[in-house]
Image (cartoon, rainbow, N blue to C red; front, side, top):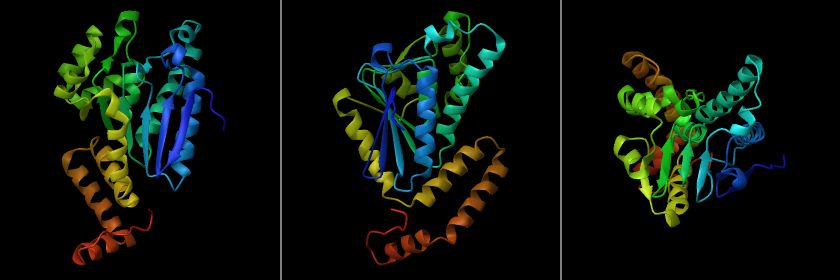
Length: 260
């Protein structure tokens, strides 16, 4: 598929998806969401790709939903259709059985922030700014922001950000646990690719199982989550990658995993 609002580059077992509506501050409209959905679906089936990096440009990761499109919505049916599309795409990113790294420069507002929250790891440039400003429009986050942010940083801080619409800079998001690392703008993508390459060098089956265990277990009670973790562990124990990993460790060499 030829994309108009995103760029998808694949190399070295990594797919880099770049949001590409610079004249609109990478605002999320239906076309961009549909193209992003197609790209993620394609990557899910591409056995050569092990890790995804989702990014924007130096000034904008994504400045929320496209307000001009939202302003044309006139009835509950259209509202449902739009928010269903938003949530489906963001859920697909979260559920992808491969790690997704958000490399955030500039503004990550509203739906842009929600896109980043659905990723497994968030890396930010020093110029990154995050906010859920929907309250200023008489709305609330609709792409999972109220749920994912609360689970990430706790309900108190999440409520403060949702109720006020306040912006927070990169270093504050690091302090409260929204992002994993903050880097100078010029080095962000290089650092993101280093992380991605490290993950891509491990067993894809093990990474998949780890993601399933964490994402699935977070919505269970602790004992159920631990039982689910054990099941994921048991499934891995029978794989060739597990055998190769143990053998390589004993022989003091680098493992050669089958799915690389």
